[in-house]
Amino acid sequence: MTHQDNSQSSIPKVIVIFPAKNEEGTIENSIATAKQSYYKPDVILVDGYSTDKSTQVAERAGAIVIQQPTKSFPAKGLAMKAGLREAFDRSADIIVFLDADIRNLTPEWVDKLVKALIEDNCDMSRGFYTRHARDAAVTKLVARPMLHTFFPELSHFEQPLSGEVCARRQVWENLLNRDSGSNPTLMGGA
Image 1 (spheres, rainbow, N blue to C red):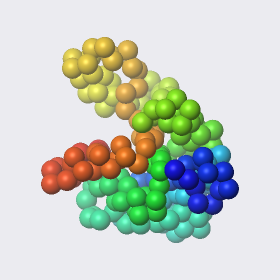
Image 2 (tube, helix red, strand yellow; image 1 turned 90 degrees about the vertical axis):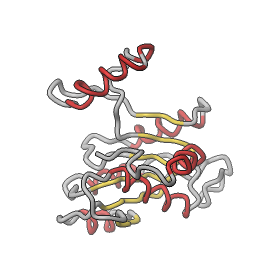
Image 3 (cartoon, rainbow, N blue to C red; image 1 turned 45 degrees about the vertical axis):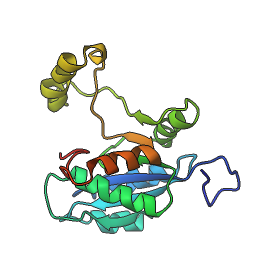
Image 4 (cartoon, one colour; image 1 turned 60 degrees about the horizontal axis):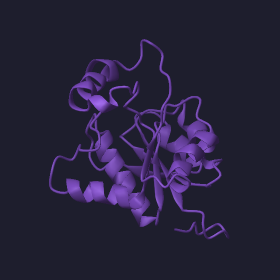
């Protein structure tokens, strides 16, 4: 697991992926901030057929821009799969998904997600943050009640859903292989 641009052989190659549609107002800052991470990640924007200038802004900010394979909405799962395949082709060791509309993203946030894998020897880490009381209707109305019903030992998690997910390449490969031939929105259709 080495980053080809770094002389320290212990630093993994990290790629950050932003699935996005019409995020021209936030994507430049998100990309610039992610690139400031200690891990100096490559950044991929997977465009969901934006009608604004998201792709042009992302390219100017130094992101690799690819198009979601089909024009479906919502299709975050399709965008995530396309981003993963691009990251695999670019020899990623660790892949981080971030939402493109985060206004208060910091390089340290990316570092913490990645460090959980390296220092704590985890396979996956997720973002956790406090939301405004009016936010997160899906979490409050669907995810938390289902978590309480099916996994009561985890019902203490206030924010089980997050667009900030980091995992080792092998975890993502296993998920894609498990999904081949089945529902294309396994990894999130919204």
